Amino acid sequence: MRKYKVGLIGFSIGGQVFHAPFIVGNPGLELYKVTARKSDQKQLLQEKYPQAIAVQEADEILNDSLIDLVVIATSNDVHYALAKKALEAGKHVVVEKPFTNTSSEADDLIALAKSKGLLLTVHHNARFHSDFKTVKKVIDSGALGKLANYEARYDRFRNFLREGAWREKDLPGSGIHYDLGAHLIDQALQLFGKPEWVFADLRKQREGAQAVDDFEFILSYPTIKVSLKGQMLAKEPTARYAIYGQNGCFIKPGTDPQEAKLREGFLPHEDPNWGEEESIDYGRLSTIEDGIEHFETIVSERGTGSDFYANVLAVLEGESKLNITAEQARDVIRILEAAEQSWTEKRAISLTNELIAY
Image (cartoon, rainbow, N blue to C red; front, side, top):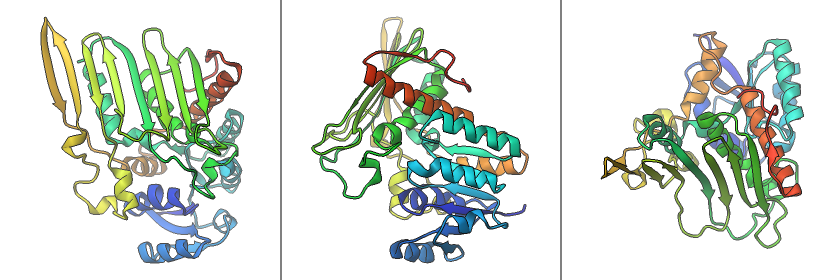
C-alpha cells in the first residue's frame, strides 16, 4: 500500500490532540508537513514527530505537489477559506468540525469537491466515542421500548474566561454551541435522522463572556423529544446521556477517555487497551417487564478514534464509502443556523426542506 502524504494546517490543541496522533498511527498515511509557527509547537513537533517538516504558512502545504491530503485543524473562522484553497489545489480535504460557519459555505465546498472528484469529509470524531457507541448499542437493542426522551450534554466547569482563546471571542463560529453542540447534533442525526423543528436557548452567562457559553437545543421528532445541552458552570458531574423509553431508562455518566489520554501525550496505536472506560463510568440500564424490575450495568464500548482515518484511507484506496459525508456535516451547520434564528426570534424553526443528507 502506498503512503499518502498529509499536510496538517493547525498545530494547536486540535492538530496536536485530535489529528496528529491518529495520522501517525495509520500505516497508510504519512504526517509530512505541519504548520507550526510558535516555538513550543516546533519543539513538540520535533520531539514527537521528527519525520514531519515544520512550515510557517499554510501555502507551503497547499502548494506542495507531493501532498495528497490536507487536514484543516484551525480556528473555525478560516475553515472555509482554507478548505476552498486546498480543493482548488487538487487536494483531498479533512476539515475539523464544525465544517463551516454557514451552510452556504458548506454547499460551496461540497459542489467544488464534487466537480474535482476529491474527498471532502469533516472530523465528527464523537461518533467514535465510547459513551456514544454504548448509547447507540442500548438504543439499538430495543431494551427501552419505544423511546420518548433523549438527553445529551457537555457540562464543564470553568467560571472564568481563558485569555486569548478564540472560541471565547465574538467571532463567526465561536461559542460552545458551535464547538460542543455540533457534536451532539451530529450524534442525534445519526440516531434519529431528520428532526421536524428546532428550538434553542443560547446564553452568555459568565462575567464578561462575548460568546455563547450555555446552550440548549430541542430537536422535535414525531414521537421523541431530543434535548442537547452544554454549559461552563457545572461544578458537579452530571449524566452525560439519559435516555427514557416506555420500558425504562439508561443513564450514562462519565465521558469517553480518549481525549484525556491524548492530552497527556499517549498514542493510540501504542496502547492495546485504548479507548476502554473505567468501570465507574459504565451506564445503568433500568427496565421493567411483566411487572418485574431489571437493573443492569452496561459495560461500555471501546472508543475508536482511529476509525476516522481508517475510513479516510479506505476511501482513498477505493475500498469504501465515506462514513462522514460533507453533506451530513453541512446539515449540522444548517441546524446551528436555525438554532441561532430560534433564539433571536424566540420561536421554533421548521427544518422541513432544510437538510440534504437525512
